[in-house]
Image (cartoon, rainbow, N blue to C red):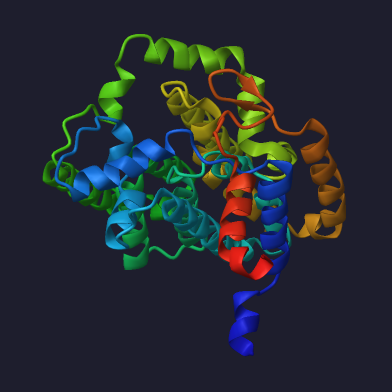
Length: 358
């Protein structure tokens, strides 16, 4: 019984249910349009005949899971991805409980809409790792576990990993900065070696993410997307947690404010060289949201005003609603699957229950 209580400590159950409601009802989950192509890569690697040249192959987590579990059916692959999504959501809300009463505000951040709309990308796994790493840093608990998490993040998505590490170096207390830098340097080195060995082993001959950035018009379009839609981009990253960022500027020292602004500018800069605008930005600002909420938690004067913070943050989250930039300004997922996630679930349930319901 105690172990079960530990699994749902503090606000874990509430936060998990809020995340489920937002992702499944308010945001509406969608699989990525290219999921069948990503599934085909598993078969190509299995048959030792890789012809795909897409750079998503540099993020091998789902591909490796498909190979390890011997998945040969795309429906099973979708079930695997969705199961990982649910389990990852639980891990995120479990690890964020150190924020105590402010943990639910983190769930209102833009990362969840990204993970809900792009089911099939490794974003949800990136969030699990970013949250866990940031927790270690906030709690000043740098160890071999931190290194292992940094290594996993590098392997899972090397571009996101590199940028998040830069942001963490900005936000971390200066007395821990050099130790963190060493962990990052070593983990990035070995993480990129692992990816390169993997790509060589499967015979990948396509362009990587770094090479793609320098394709014609990519940087021009990406920077224009951010410049012309700056308020939408910023809102899409923070959503309901936006107010905490504004409030915190009036509660902490100017030195800490400068670090947050610097980290925010770095996030915007790297977002402006990627075409997946809001998707990238919402992942990069996760450490900023956590650091800001942790400052709230540690401010004694705010403990009596917690209800006011939620009274403002929650209505604003729903009133302003879903504002997202992905090629153009969106209020709904850009994915247009032939079969929606909900119809997929209905089809699978009907298949499993066909003999019983008949």
